[in-house]
Image 1 (cartoon, rainbow, N blue to C red):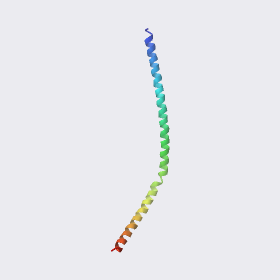
Image 2: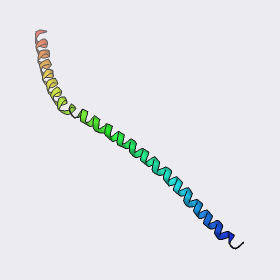
Image 3: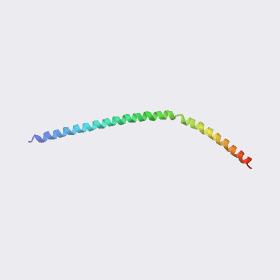
Length: 85
C-alpha cells in the first residue's frame, strides 16, 4: 500500500506530460497552418501593390487633363453666357 501512492503520482505526472505534449503538437500544427495562410495573403498583397503602383502617376496625369478640361468648360460656359444675353 505505501508503494501505491507514489506509483499513481508518477503515472499521473506521465499522463499529464503526454496530454500536454499532444495539445502542444496540435497547437503547433495550427500555427503552421496559420503561417502558411499568412504567407499566401502576403504574396497576394504584394501582387496587388505591384499592380497598383502605376495608378498614382496615371491619376496625376488624369487629374491634370481633367483640370484643363474643366478650365475649357468654364471658358465655354462664359462664352455661352455672353451669347445668351
